[in-house]
Image 1 (spheres, rainbow, N blue to C red):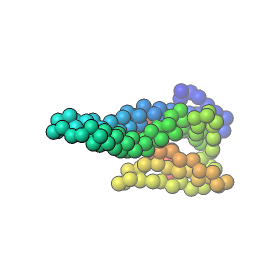
Image 2 (cartoon, one colour):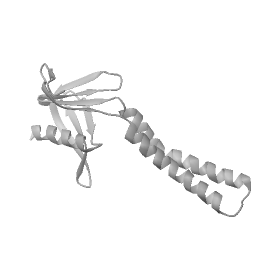
Image 3 (cartoon, rainbow, N blue to C red):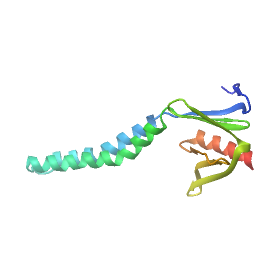
Amino acid sequence: MSDTVLPGLGKLLVARHYKATGYFVAAAFIGGALPCMVLYVILTSPPQPLGYQATVFGCAVGGGLLAALPLLIKGRRKRGSSIEAYEHGMRFISRSGMPSTFLFTDVAQIRRKTIRGALAEATFMLADGRKYTAGVHDREDLRMLEGVLQRFE
C-alpha cells in the first residue's frame, strides 16, 4: 500500500481503515453487564412478585442499552471510513466513499485535543474554513497523527 502515489499528495505513508468491531464488542460488554448482574440477583434472592422482577429486569436492560448507545452510534459513524496520510497531504474517505483531500500547505491551524496529556484527536482547519478531524482510537492512529504533526513542526 505504501507504493501508492497520488498526484500532488506524493507517496502514501499510512492508511487507516476503521471497523466498528471494537465499539460493538465494548457496547455488548457495557450493555450486558447490568442485566446479567440483575438477573443473578433476581435468581439468587428470596422470591418476589413476578411484576416486580419484570420491572427491575426491564429497567436494567433499558439502562444497559442507554449506557451502550454512545458506543453503538460512534461505531456506526466510524465504520467504513478511512484516513490516508501522504507526504504532502491527507485524504479522508467517508463511509459513502467520497474522498476529501487537502495539502499540508492549505492548513491554516491545527487544534489538538488531549486527555490527561495524551493526544486524543487533531483537527486540521483549512484556510477556506473546512475542518477535518482525525481521532486516536488505537496505537496505529496515534503513530499516524504524531507523524503528520511532526511534518508541521
